[in-house]
Image (cartoon, rainbow, N blue to C red; front, side, top):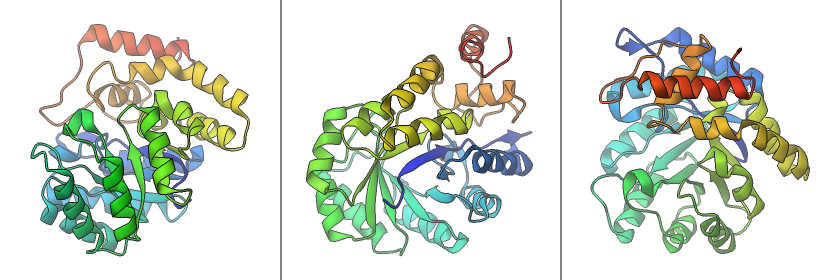
Length: 294
């Protein structure tokens, strides 16, 4: 599988309103040391909607530079405009990424035929392997299984999907329709093991921003047939997985990394800091599983 394993949906750190290049490069190095298979810059967790085009491309270039070929870079280059998605994807290809993550166009709610034409046009504009990203909770539309099947048949470089719809039955449907060569990745940390049990090969993880080594161990253990070891790790960190979504992602994840001294707790509007009560709840969950010192 081209993109099996653990991929971290990396945050984009800011300082005084600008991208914090140094903090970002350190975060990438932490991921390399943590043993993940790759990183996903400028996805949902990377606050891509609030980055300008030049910033978006710069973060991708930073990721490639810091990764130095040691882990894969699957760049978020989707958009709700097909032309913009092609522009970002070609820029990412020029930067040297290993693949492109293409989110479902949001807000404009295309039909399934519109989705097919959108992704097909992007795929034919690049040599990069493409992972589709279905997240109906944010986009209000899913890439339906027959559409995924059509795309995989029409475009040989569409090689996988990040499945963030919360439905294990859909993973079963995708696996049956697409065969073993097509990669399916969980888009939700709490569902990584259930999804892997019915055919997914890994996760694009939010939690691995904070605990890359543990998420990689969990995924690798399950893939190797050691479901008991994987379940122990899932159970140990489950409360943290949940707490990272007590506010809109990536607000809690950035707050957690700030508590650990990894970045400033700074966001781009319209995202902002969460209330003190929720921050205390998050800190409690991190302490309970040993991530933050009591």
